[in-house]
Image (cartoon, rainbow, N blue to C red; front, side):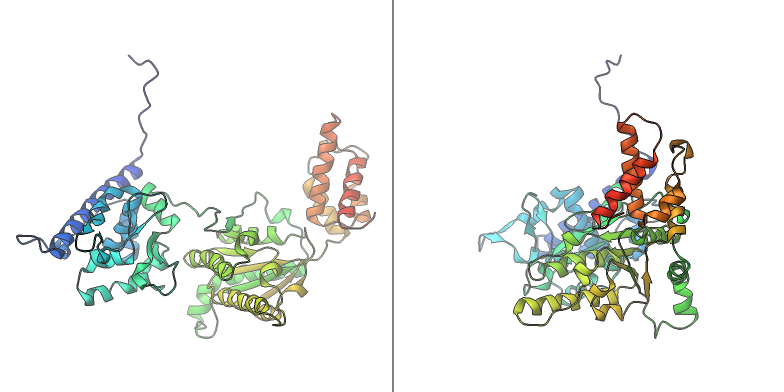
Length: 460
């Protein structure tokens, strides 16, 4: 009889179970490869089995995400060894404990095993050297064949699976830490395809909206420019390949949105992504820009490296903070700042996806960037007719408006952006609720409009 105190059984659906079973089979195979490699390396008695002769688990009929990743990358024996080696510390760290053995002659670990010690993790953390040892042993030709696995054109990089992380310039190439990407780790362990989340290692945030194009009030010229951007995204493949323009046109597309605050730049970028079913990531400049030499480039590279493997739109808000005008080189700091801007320009220009930069003042953007934009889109302050449409779009429930509210008059009298009008509506709703009213009065909206104008140093 149940008392209610027993723990509930863990619910696991078929997909999660398939992924767990696949991990068990592949890690058991990696363990066998590791033992065989150690046996042959130390010439243990008998005739140890050659690691390369140990066949990996079959993929036929395997519905797991691990099998899918191996299939997508068309990974061979050595590549599967490296993938499982990078995964082992996260799911079965004890599997790599044999690599902790010490060389009695020098009273330290074996150099050929590679590895590094984490700050909190007690297990063995593999490096490129570990991967080369496990997949190639002492065979120099086979070791040389391991290096291309970590280059940009390889499926490991192209599919955002894993990479070598180097924090110490000048040290051997294989000394870099073997690191799975966060998205690959989630996919391989849980079977779920998570989107990257904002963090110090990934200074960008996925932005979404519940609004649609009907909620965005833009002029005809702006809409025409937006249609051009959408046309490129939808037809890029045909234009580059079918029209044979890939030799002369770069695959990336760069747009500059400029105009006063609150005129719809961010919402437009978000809706573009929504329409083409592409994630839009807003770069957090406070996390990217660093006063330390080299850190800004490193922070930005993290975003571009991941975006290169996904169909993302990168959105730089307040872009003049990152892509501002270069200064005269009167000091070493000025020279470095200019070098930093040049680096950013090159990364944006080389990016094969879509980049949107937004700024309030076009004049703040470095001219070298402006010349490389495919589109410059000016978002002006809305005119009276557009302001009335914004008012009516935000205050759709007439039952919440008092009889003295005249939205047409408000639109004509107060020159406000869409963002400012949203602030006014919020203020008016707060006022009504605080005074225990179920309707917004004209006085609430007028007071809110005056507050917004004062923020900008203007009067009604």
